[in-house]
Image 1: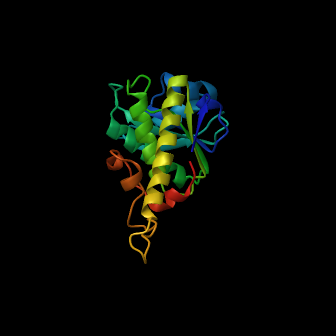
Image 2: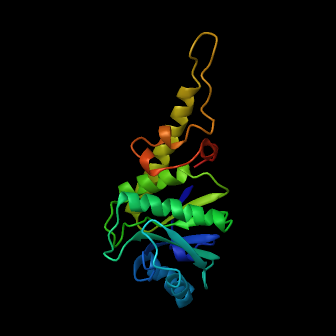
Image 3: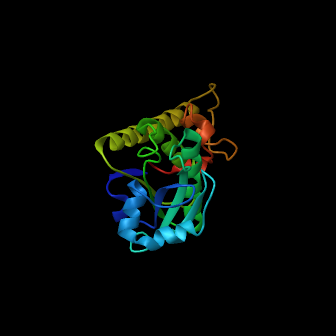
Length: 215
């Protein structure tokens, strides 16, 4: 995972994610940038697949974008307000759709922090937690952000959770007796999020395969 202070519409990735509303019309913010750069056909294709429930996501072509696909993740309804569960669900859905189209690289914006009015720091904690808990074939997850505050929030969260992961692995490998060592937690019955994301495990699903990926 990495942070890019860059216009998401300019990125050369397999899929970019639009922070959408549940009816999938594309107005301002990220949606407007994608529509301007990629063409009106992206919005027409998206709206033909809506409405969808908040937290769900659909895939369209990328139009004239460098990205081949746009994943429209419904972060908010028609009142244009969001919540922590909505952001978590929309992030999971976006990553799931990326796996379905066999994307290797994906770029996501900071969900709900524009018109949705959601806290940047809280958004970063939720989205990074979900991304760390994701288990799939994605090779790179990029958080495409605008502004120093957003970059700082996501970089801080990436660093914090990386340190927590390493510390937990170290603790799990310490000796439990003079003759035995505790095994490193690598079995599929112990999800990564249970010990790397204090306070955010309710937002995340995933298996320890994700632990083997570097941030």
